[in-house]
Image (cartoon, rainbow, N blue to C red):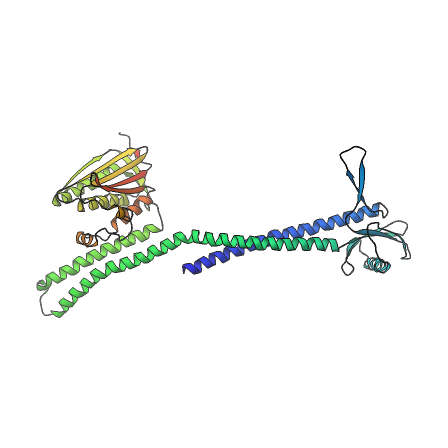
Length: 418
C-alpha cells in the first residue's frame, strides 16, 4: 500500500509540475509570437510611411559626431500598385525578391481585400494601405524568421522542460520518501498495535473459553460448586474490558490531539484528590506516599483526562516502588508552566528501555506487568493526555534518584484568593 501511495504521490506531483511548465512555456511562446508579429508590423508600417524606404536604425558611438546606420534585420520589402493592378514601384534594399513571387504576393493581397494578414504558402506577412489617388502600397515581411525564432524557442523550452522534469522527478522521489515517512511509521505502529492487541486479547479469551469448557463438562454440578471457574471468567472479562476501554481511549484521542472537554480546572485540588485516593493503596502495598502541592493552580483542560493522567502516574509509581518503598509527588508553577513530578524508589529502569516506555504495549518485564494487571498502555495514555494539553512528559531513572516522571503543562495560572 505504501509503495502505491508513493507512486501516486510522485505521479500527481509530476502531473502538476508538467501542467505548470506547459502553461508557462505556452504563455512564453504565445507572447513571443505576438511580439514578433508586432515587430514585423512595425517594420512594414515604417516602410509604408517612408514610401518604401526600409527603416534605418542609428547606433551612436561614444564619440560625438560618429554615427552609423543599420538596416532592419527583419527581411521586408514594399511595392506600389496603380489602379490597373500594375506594380509601378518596388523597394527593399535588404532583400531580393523574384518577379514571380512578387506578382503572386500582390495578386493574393489584392484578391483578399484585407488590410493585413498572412500568405502562408509564400511565407509572407503583408500590410496594405490605399492612397487617395487610387494607388495601393503593400509592405511585405518574411514569416520564416518568425517561425525560426519560435521553433528555436520551442526547442529550447522542450530541452529546459525535460531537464526540469528530471530534476523535479528526483525531488519528488526524495519528497515522497520524506512526506510518507510519518505515514509509514503510523502504518507500522498501527500494524504493531493490532498485533499486540490481538495477542493481549488472546490470553483472556483463552482462559474464558477454557473455564467455559470446564463448566460445560460438569453441567450436573451446582453453580456454587463451580464458583472458582466462574470467578476466573469474570476476572478475565474485567481485564479484557479494561484493555478494550484503553484501546478505545487511544483511538479516540489519536484523531484529536487536544482536550475534548475543555474547562477551567483547579489542578491543585485535582492532584490532591488523587493523592488522597491512593493513600490506602500505598499503605496496603507497604509504600510511603507524600506530596508537596502548590495551592490555587488552575488550567484550561479536560478534567477527567487530567485526573486519569495523575492516577496513571501514581498507580505506576506505587506498583514499582518496591516494599518498603517511597513515592513522592510534587506540583509547582514555574514560569507560567505547571511542573508535576512523580518519583518512586525501586529497581531503576535500564537506559535502553527509557525511550520506549511510552510506546503502546511496551513493558520492561512482561510477566511482572501481567501479574500487576497491566497491559503496557498506561504510559501511552498518559503521553496522549499530556500531548492533548500541549505539554511534555519525560522520564529519568538512576540508582540515586530513583524513577522520576516529569509532566510539564503550559498556561498554568495561580487562582487569586477571595
